[in-house]
Length: 509
Image 1 (cartoon, helix red, strand yellow):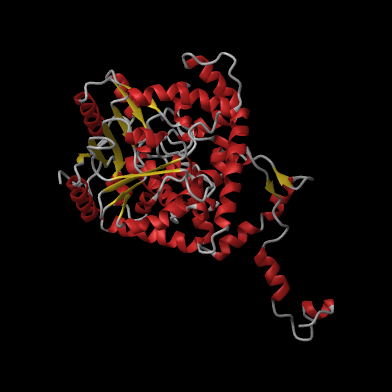
Image 2 (cartoon, rainbow, N blue to C red; image 1 turned 90 degrees about the horizontal axis):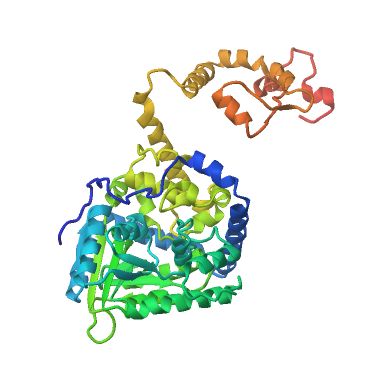
C-alpha cells in the first residue's frame, strides 16, 4: 500500500475545498435571493422531491432501523479505516486493478492527467462525480489541453451553460426547461433549431449529442458511491444509463473516490441500497446500478485505475465532533428540506458541497479559519430538519454549533478591541450572575413597553448587533412585569388573617 494518510492534514491545493468561492455566504446569499426565477425553480424542485421521498419512506415500517444500521456501519468504517483501506487495496489489485493514492487535489489531478496521456487521447467522457468536482478536475484537464465531456444530463446542462452545479443530486436544479432549451440551441452543434422545451425532446437532443462521444471515447472517468472492502468491488448508482455506457465502452476506466466511501462487506449493500434511492430521488430503487471488480479482457475496460483521494478527509476524521460528516452518502436529502438552501440555492455556499452537509464538510476538510469557510456554519437556522432527513443520522446541527464555536475561538486572539458582541455578552454575564442585578434590570421592562408604541412592536434598535436583528424582524413588546415579580405577587405568603390570591378569587387551593 503506497500511503494511508490517516491523521495527517491535507495540503492546500488546486481545486480543494470551495473551488468556486469568491465571497462569503451572507454576501452571496443576498445576491441569490434577488433571483426570483431561481427561487421559483428551487421551491418547485425541492417540494417535488420531498413529497416523493416521504411517500416511499412511509412504505417501510423499519425505516428508522435502517437509518440506525447505516449509521452503525459507517461508524465501523471510520473506526477501522486504515485496516479497511489496506484490505480493499489487496482485493482490488488482486483482480487486476491499479490503485493510486492522492494526498490532495493537485496530486489527484496530476495522476489522472498522466493516465489519460498514456492512452494518447485528449478527450474523455465522465460519469457524474462529486469527487472530481471537488478537485476541479475538468478545469485542470482543460488547462492542460484535455476535454472532459459530462454525460449526466444535468451535469451536461451545467457544462454547456458555462455554469456551476448547485445541488449534489440535481446539479441543474436552478434551471427550468426553457432555460435548458436556450442552452442547447446555443451550445449544441446540429441541434434542431425548432427544438421545444418539452422534456422528451430535450432528452433526445442530449442523447444524440452524447452518443457520438460514447462511441469514440478511449477513456472514461467515474466516481463511486460504494467500495466493498471484502471483495475490492466499486459501485455506481445512477438514473440515466450514461454511467453504464462510461463503465463498459471505453478501454480505460479511471475512478476518483474519497477514502471514506468504503463499506466493510457486500451484505452492507442491503441497507444502503434501500437508504440511498429513497433519500435521494424518492425512488424504491434507482434505474441503473453498476458494480465492477477489477479489469476484464473479454467485456469492459482492460485498464482499470482507482485514485483514492484524501484532500482533507483525514483532517475531518481527526475531529471528534465532525468525523461523522464523513458518513455522508451524498443523497442530498438535507438540502431538500433545508429552508436556507431552498431560498438561496447552492451557488451561495461557494462550495462543491452546498446545503447543510456542505456547511460542515468544507470547514472540516479545509479548515474553519479559511476565509471562504468561516461563514458557512452560520448558513443554517438550526431547525434540525436536516438531521431528521439524513439516512445515516449525521447530527448536522450539532456539528454546526461545534464549528461556530471553533470559528469564535479562532478569532479571539485577532481583536485588540472587544467587539459589540463581546461587550454584550459581558453585560449579560454581569446581570445574570446576580439575582439583585437582574431584578434591577427587570424594573426597566415598562420602558421597553413604552418604546414599542401602540402596535406593541419594537421595530428599530441602535447598534450594529441589535440593529441588525431589527433590520429583518420586529421584537414584541416586553411584558409589564417580569416572571419573578409575578411569582412573588401570586405566591408570597400573605400576612396572618389575610386571604391568599386563590381565596380572593374563589378558586380552590
